[in-house]
Figure 1: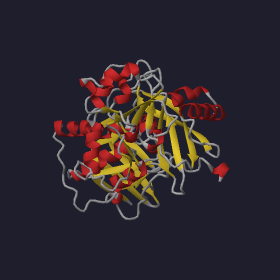
Figure 2 (figure 1 turned 90 degrees about the vertical axis):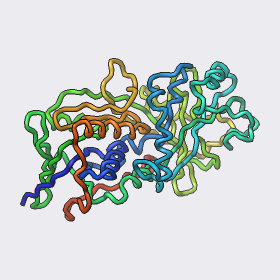
Figure 3 (figure 1 turned 30 degrees about the horizontal axis):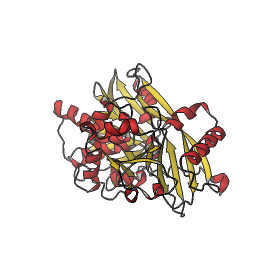
Figure 4 (figure 1 turned 120 degrees about the vertical axis):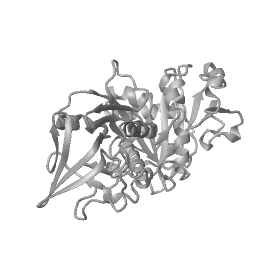
Length: 404
């Protein structure tokens, strides 16, 4: 038995970009479905540090880059959504920290003080002069350095995914591209997506098909018969530290390079511990190191930077993460969300968690330009007997099993 489902837009990939777009389309009255082959938010999304940053870390060269300018408005967009006043309602999502900080150990920050005080960064960076204004972890007599408060929020990403999915579960389909789902094309135009389960086949048709599958986009393009645009991966070797030190850390540590020496976020594990999640220069350079070597370097760095924090009983683990992006001439970070139109499809990469709203804007501009108006979605839903993907587990799930 074959059933045809007519939609306005099919979004392929349930990470933050796909979910933000999918939610926005539904709010605007589009008949939109989302297809996901694993868990919702389970790829780059949950492995991100949850920082909705405004580009300050891109200014560590002492100049304002194009990347920094593009991303500057994103924290305010997210804050509106978190208040329930944006194009999507994230009022049910949890904020881990209202601010990410930047700290310079010792005298390292002097060259940046005047830049951070300049007009270019007004409203984005504030130097905290009084120790009583510092985050608790820096209110220690051994701390010597400067602390800046940034216009960057840190979110519990699993709760963000939950908020974007809420109320739309019956428009999200679990697929398996190797087993039960295929893209049927006519040239480079997608005719429909065919999904078979049991004795039932769905033919899913759409005015527009949008890939938001991150690293999975490469394989989807092969199924679609495309060789362009090409994808690049920028790999990271992240570090996780689970411990009982009472004070969380949400901060970029200033180094001598444009990339922060270390970027740390803190995540409660539900058992009274913090999981510190380490990115930045240590994660980029760590690709050349084994997990054991990477843990050794991380332990040494944290001991040098925060000697008053006792991590003797901490548990350590590492994780490799690929950031999927459109290919650049050098392995540079792209400046904005990327979309590429092909026939009735759009290939996209958001390139950054914070840029999910930007990607959504770009796709909706295409729909408006092509006069693809919402056809109304009241009562629109998938058949009852289809499978729906689950929401991802926290990034540290299973990482510390050897220690439990």
